[in-house]
Length: 120
Image (tube, rainbow, N blue to C red; front, side, top):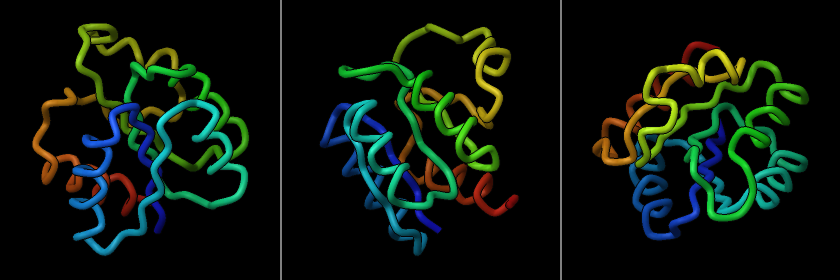
């Protein structure tokens, strides 16, 4: 199973990546919408860990592209903002499976990735 992490902060993406790799998963990292779409076009992924607030591009566009091209791939959203804190992201993004604060401990994020990826 390959996990795609889409996070603008390289340090944070690296921390998440190491924790997920410890679970035996292959991890690809993208830092923008464009990079994420490029990865999706050439690498099959099982789940995406996606920050709602990307520095370059739109997380919603990444989720929409994924939903259209790969409808079984789930997206686990993380954010540091209060945007979508009411849970409305689930109304806007069909393949959203979870919405967590960016401050969630990396081991917990890895466990969530494992949980949702195992459901396929």
